Length: 526
Image 1 (cartoon, rainbow, N blue to C red):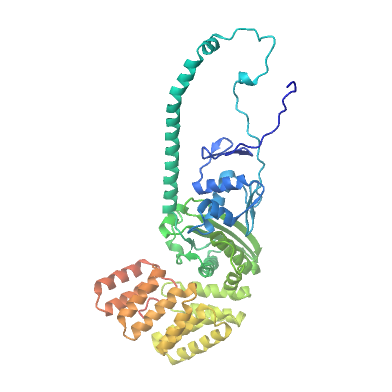
Image 2: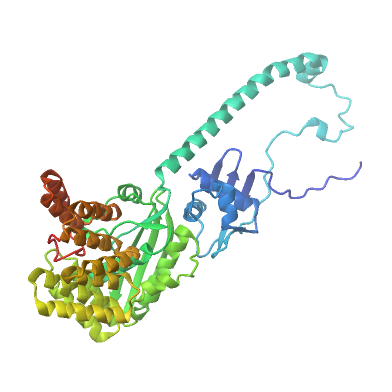
């Protein structure tokens, strides 16, 4: 044509993308960063392809779930885990992203700059080069003369070679697809299907190690709050002594049977409070979310609520009530001093051999600082009911009755209040009233195990051993590591004339560290 060809940057070819030292090759199913291969699960790789294929656009969470998982039998938490893997592989900071931007509650956007594909270094094709008049008359090299002389021979050789090349390529492609399918099935087989979490006891970094009650109390409150979120299965409370901190996240997840683990460190220095929280995926070992908080101690309720919201959103997506129920659970009082005393009382109840005296004093202190603290009042009701049951002291019963009435007037809707009323009526009748309150308490996941065990105790007191044993087993189906329920079950099996089963239950109880009492005095049969 006579005009010089113009050079312009072409968009990346289909299936191969470059950005910031990263090469994403869909055909080869590889991701490299600065020349180093990055391991990715198949689903995470597919998410990245979907985002890069819509570079600059907001891709909704549902759109990603549909495109990658088919949106069947999965929770939004799988997408959060995939994004966390991608951030690790891309070295992308979620707070200052270069590649994947989070649009809270909506989806994600690829914000990296796609670079033109580098041309391959190869000799120019003769047909594409302009003729040089100076060399147009020169004879071709020997090889070229031979090819020109026997074009039909060369064509037939190519046809003979071509089927073998295709067969080899097809074999490699089939092997790659088979490996990916096997890997995908293996990933899905080892990943818990439902959104599930274990809340580890938070560790204290304070100079005063006696402050551990505060850190562990925050973890227990977090566990109870998350247990109330629909769609999340929360593992039972794990006593600090039972947590093997030497295990990595994958091993810990396999041991606990959960998809994620929440851990945190807490440091109090005067009126300053620092919490470092982390949510980890137990299948890949990746950190899904982490955040440091440093505020005045008075902000503890807001901080706890923010952590719980982040965790719940990561596992099941945006909550329909925008986290209002979590805020209510995690703000039982606005008085920090009352909350501190309450946590001391909860910690005291967890100690082996504790019959409530120390806990009672802490709950009374909490009420002195906040007269409307319903949970502290319910705690007093339960302790006094246990005292009456153990010693048949009329004063204890009256104290329990008044405490329960006060708690019911403060907030009858919370499970711990209904549980306390169930304890009261179980101790001194009528049984039907106890069952009524226990069944109301059962609706609260935070106290469900205790509520079911309370019903079993009522059936046992009425002489219905078969129903009592069946109901204790129902409680253990929810929390298989509750030593008190195992002990109570063992006692009923002993009374029913099943010594072998009773011994098995008692042995299980003795291997578990005692937690919050379920019925009667700690470790007492009921």
